[in-house]
Image (cartoon, rainbow, N blue to C red; front, side, top):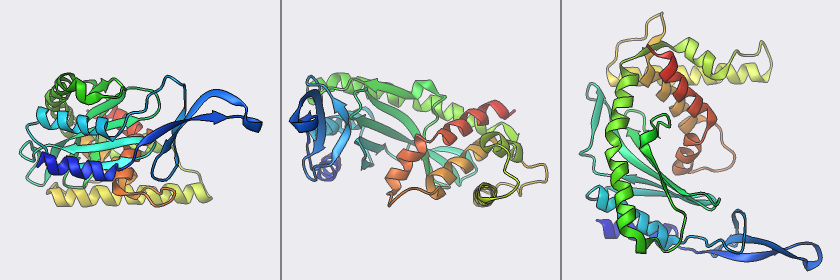
Length: 289
């Protein structure tokens, strides 16, 4: 199974990232270098120094191998490239956590960001919620993120990588506890939306955008309550912090407008970096009681 997954990742990232010197006006030399994809010559990331060594697909494969060893095998790996390699790594579905009844479940998902921004690679433990196909991480749960030194030749450092992913594996229990906390607390959904998005304008395009977004979020919330077997929403607008966060995270991931054609994997990456999702997470913990 892991061999097939590695071949899939290799075929998705079937290019190198090359470093070339950048010139100023009239061919003037500069100390800067640019990174370019070997398959389409597109610029990757930002300008770097002469000492910078870009990582390659082989280093990404080492990350996948290490995670497979730590989790005793993988079910699936999804890929995305945008100024770096993004991976969503799915361990066995046996590590299921039931949140409400039999329909609202979460499964562990590792998200790896190997960017070309000069910073360390980041690996985070997130979740996949089958009820709504949301895939996210809770950034307030600090134990669920680890840093991996940005370097080439990662296959020679497999023991260290495996130990890092073992630490990440152990953080799944912390994430489960955080999700349980949100599910066991309640908040007013109307007040929550007001805290996240602010007061709407009285008229004009921004008022229309606010109205349409609010309706879309409430429709998502009501649909998920019905499919999970929860009772109908009362006039007090009280929902769990877990429901409230996922309604906004799901809206941002699945329905928020994006420029150009964006893949499902791309939407996951964008949603996890979206400041509204991060604000919603923080408020879901602080407002729910």
